[in-house]
Image (cartoon, rainbow, N blue to C red; front, side, top):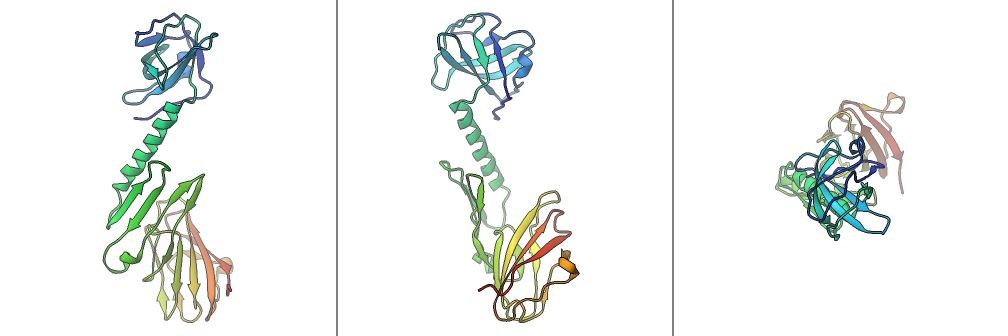
Length: 254
């Protein structure tokens, strides 16, 4: 089920209704201001009058200017209404609760697409999503946590056990270089979706680093890194990893 909504949808009853009917008609030509749901989608409408009476109804279908409704929703009671009573699409608690449920259901559905011993859990109270990967070998050391709160996104620090930068695991990676290293990147999003990460290298200049294909640097030359110390680099792509922009964010950071 999806909860539908539009902006500034307001009209009036074209004819009075009693407290038991399951359809209502609004002023001619104004039904188009409202969504046109098909099963199982809905929208909520609020009826009010000059006396301050309120009833919220769930609209399951609309045929031009006629709404099919479920009466007395969101803590209100079905009542009789006279022609001319306002019918408006307002933000209601029921609407927000249903939208939250839809989002949580979508997150759970997304969880079913993860493989390789990955699990996803959703906190019903906060809509926080937690992703953990476990298994044998190097993958057992990787875990990630994505928390959505007030628009922010937080991920766990990933200590690389091998030379592959797996974007399923996070977006902040650390590695200590102890010999010639060839770095790779895996699980890059499809073209049209930007992806970025930070690579925190220790002793990056102590041995030869071979960067993955498609990395572009300022001036066309990879930076010279610190042989005994810490360097921080950033990378981003928008074409599924065909090209990456590489940036030296900090050299010999202490």
